[in-house]
Length: 272
Image 1 (cartoon, helix red, strand yellow):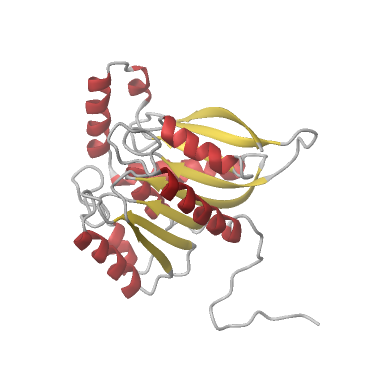
Image 2 (cartoon, rainbow, N blue to C red):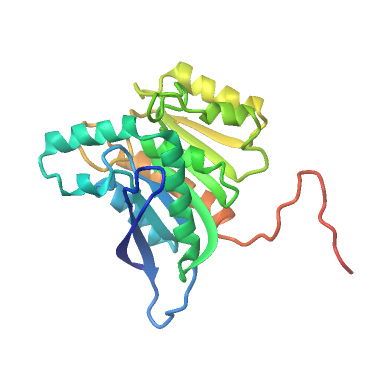
């Protein structure tokens, strides 16, 4: 399926008015200008919407989804060309940004997605690294029908954002994920950013809260889906296999209109 790319700069309230840039990659179906598709939010890693993230988002869009990929840096950083300065600026942006501002970014992104005329309002989310954690937090939004989180960082250590003190797992324990969309957590067993103890904590917290979750641990390092060889971690075959799994989750949840959800064990009422 053919796709095209545009972007919106959306002002924020909690980040001193600094805008977030949201890239939209959407299907194009000739002769069907009013076609509508489900939507997917792709949260970027700390390097922002680089080639690997854009290509990942484009692959999802070509399957028939309106995809938004959110750039979490301030507009001022978009013009920096010195790679060392840009890397430092991105790192500082990550640790200086408040968790509430990250949540506002997610809300603004979903708000924009459901407002698009080519989106039918059925939303899923995914992301890698920093974006994996943000996709995890996006699962608290009842509009998100599925979240697939690739090697989400800082979840186990609760160190997202300014002050390095987030409440992601606390909210799980408090029941904020109960009755929400489907959750998938994917980690590499050789991931030095999320060690075994951290993965065990995340899994235990979700299971103790009785959250239906698919928890996948594969033989890979951190960032294994990034299709670049800069650090020698990209596993193309494994990425292809997991992409098929991701699309099955999205198709089964956001991709199909199943009607209203009912509690497990309770049959829906039928009118004769």
